[in-house]
Length: 137
Image 1 (tube, rainbow, N blue to C red):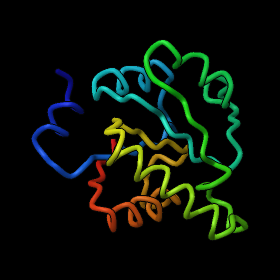
Image 2: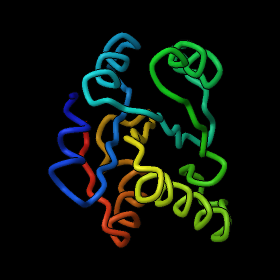
Image 3: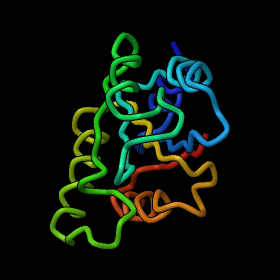
Image 4: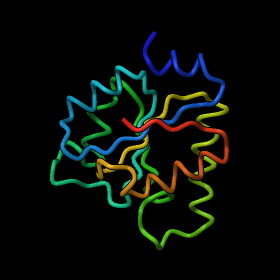
């Protein structure tokens, strides 16, 4: 049993992990996904492209396919202030359902390493209202 499964079994509150890939390699990300038993990586970048090509949307999805599902929700939960409230709510509801109903081990990913300086802080603050615990990796 991996760390993520152990933590979800020992705590009724679902756990959602967050991570910024800044300064990390794809191999490091893959290792974290395996270690924590992540079933879906949720990419919340508004523009899911990177100078590090392996972290661009389609390359990342392809390379993660053998170990977890890739889901881009940057159109709903991206850091741009132009995202409509209804879309934001839809994105939050999607994560809540994935955590509470589907019991998925979720990793929310963006580029910024420090979630306190990233819009992931806003996302996890909202998820806390739904009794979802957050761990930053």
